[in-house]
Every structure is written in structure tokens, then in C-alpha cells.
Length: 69
Image 1: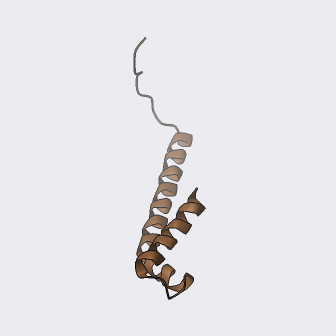
Image 2: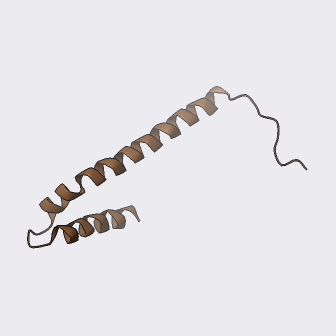
Image 3: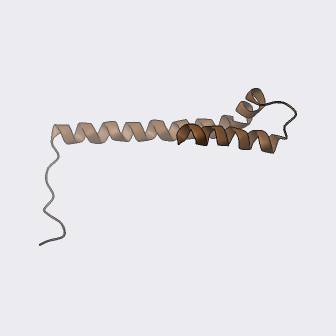
């Protein structure tokens, strides 16, 4: 039994699926990048000012992780 088969031509459905899944991956990556750039600002606005900036960032990342899971 061969490990791989002959390549086949992509039909319109395959191309549409490939484009839409690539677009979804780009949007997800964009979401992560925007969150990382604004994590400090989010920490300053949503957590008490008595927290050290390190702990505000950790709380921001922890909140994101809980939402992700």
C-alpha cells in the first residue's frame, strides 16, 4: 500500500475552503497581535492602579488564557 497517492486537481469547493480557512487564520493571528500590543493598556484600565505593572500584565494574560480555555 503506497504512503501517498497521486496529486489531484483542486475543485472550486477546495479552493474556497482553502481561502476561507486562510482568512480565518489571518484574523486569529491579527487578534493575538492586537491583544499583545494593547495588553499594557488593558491592564491599566481594568485592574486597580495599586498593582505593579508586572502583575497587571499577568492578570491581563491570565484573563485572556481563561477566556481562551
